[in-house]
Image (cartoon, rainbow, N blue to C red; front, side, top):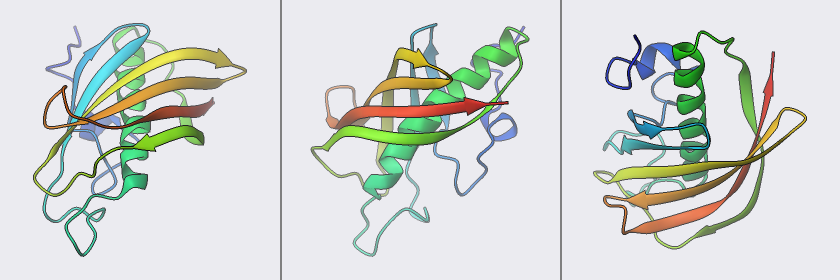
Length: 143
């Protein structure tokens, strides 16, 4: 039986290094999930001052949803569909992340309209008490 511990993200995600922004799914259920990503010094998303791109934070949220979705569909023997980030709404940034930080995501599926998943995302840095960004993303899923 497939478990979070046995699920190999690098083999199952459509994104591959250096574009893959999820190291581990921490927990999942039908409505939400949590994932993590350690920002390495050689990340292509680090700017000249050592800060992680804010656009990449949004993509981390989208990939967190994708990782949870792919895990659940593979575990339940369902067809895995491709998807892409269709839009970003009301995303706020409170702090920045840098090389060496561990990002944590909490994603919550709020609605699904004609193949578009509406997801509230919160991104934390190094602990669940350190919220650095939050907002809504919409993921379009297709066959």
